Image (cartoon, rainbow, N blue to C red; front, side, top):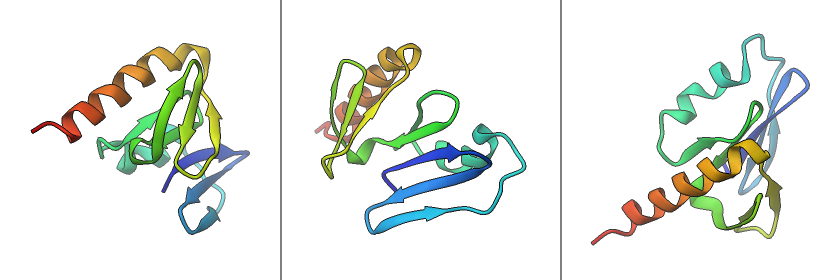
Length: 96
């Protein structure tokens, strides 16, 4: 999973092998993605979007660059925290 976004009342999972849309959700986005957010690879970016740090290759201002060439605009209020969390993730992941 590269990222998850809420589209209307459904969840859209962008995966390395395609896109999957969920059935209608009846809970908040945060509740629906809670199992993924318990994994440190995932980060909530605003009210309806979560990114997988493993697929982020860089951050340029408010734009997260993904390993498949896509870019995701981060909410202004989430960009700074996302950059810090992404940097910490990679520092911990590649620590000796």
